[in-house]
Image (cartoon, rainbow, N blue to C red; front, top):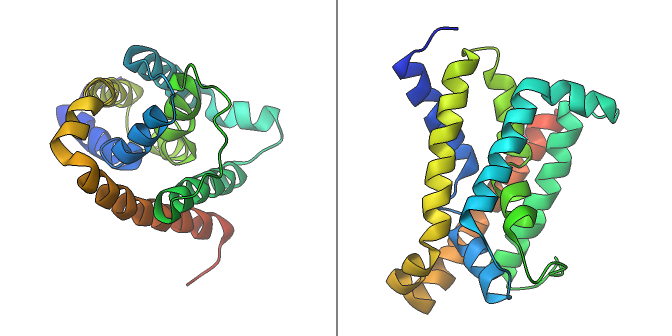
Length: 190
């Protein structure tokens, strides 16, 4: 194992972009407004555990269920598509089945530790040492924790109109990510 500051920064930036916790603020606020309780520490720890499990055992876990990485990514693209449609169209596709706690589902999984971040992690293993990836994930989970803790502050800062605009904008971004994830894992060329 070789600790490398620049590799940590590179992996951090890739994972930060894929997790996109700042882009998820409208989703998080929407979940809170529906009555979902979000515990920042619990969500961050569960997401960290999921990411670590897939970092070290990702392909084996999927193989256990007879699923390949592409199929997992395509399934994740559908979840992202439906979340994006909720945000853009203002409709409810996902019923809130856990009104008391939303920390694990949908925040930790699939929002933070979803198909995109898990697939990215598995592919980063071939380029970077595990120690650098683990440190980058820890740093990302600290950012996730802070954003989850400060969502009320973002809500006050942006106001109701700002949140609606942000929700629609990031809904379209999420829709584009879902389409890209689907296309890149099906072999379809646009």
